[in-house]
Image (cartoon, rainbow, N blue to C red):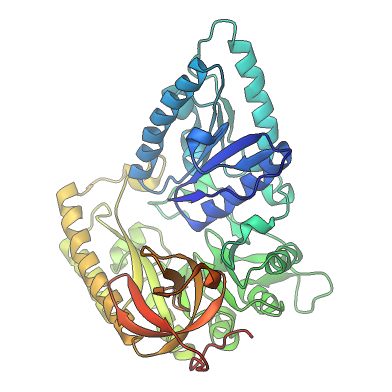
Length: 485
């Protein structure tokens, strides 16, 4: 969960918005876009709901627990709204994102304090929705009561892309030299456990010229690292840039090669990828493009062919292993990350053992692990043989133990090397700064805030489960990655 923090407020701005973001990097990107949409209306970003006139909860629907967190937060905001009413002021509450898309009518029924419910495809219509909510609020003032269902609801999938209507990113979208850039949205894979096709819609790729224009603007605003985003980012097939040679569409590899030509850009990442969309050109890009960081998040979900088929993943364990072998052949120092779901309906001891063997055979630098959670409307929710919660908990603990050992081993393998670190924030202790290595490891050193946003050579001295300690070095270059002058 990430809070979008305040920037400088100009004299003419009179309103404040607090945006709380749950879930993935795509949601963080969408929160930035909502802030950009609201800025011309006079909204500056606030550090807390208590200081805000408008609170937006940008939600994630992947896990049931995430949805319940939203309803819990809405209960607290309802009480804050009531306090404001007694003081003679108001607080507008909006729910955005995937929970809004999937449960819009339920939200306004269950929590009447909500003024606006807006799905991921309608953020550009926030000004209109705020105006409609204000009119509804005026209509209710005659008796001061709020009726269930009174919130403004917009969860339609428009015919046009939301990207066609969103403002260009602002300088505030670059944080400590790094920025997100959404290039693809939606999913056509229809994994049986996943709600994304129903909350984000069909796969859509932005035109290459539009992506390149935004990339250049972000670099001009100070970004030295760009992370390309999409629900299935390596399914990208955008309209080719005008005047380019080589077909009417570009794949992700072509787009990466073109973005790498932008002066001042040192690092490129992409997430989240799907094994079915790792083509030859993208694999070789990991060899040929020095700006492309040696880190890949490639979700497999399970090591059992039977469970993968039940999940409708469209690939087996051998296909995944061959992909990893090919990637490591072109990029031997590649750090691999993945997603795993344990306790999918019908998962046997043998199926879980297959997952553990796959993890042991491949070796991961990091991973995200989950217990299977029924999501309403997905095929998996209707399957029989749902597993006992205690069994899922035990399997998750065993998997996390193995993956945790692998992550510590990977971190240890880097001790003694010199690597470029992009520093992003102050550390937990005074006099520390924290950054990311090329392999997305957290690295902390003694230093001051002037280092934030800079790439600095660091000798790694010690490794821990979730981070590494290092020291800044001068006049010594890393073996593979060059630091920009």
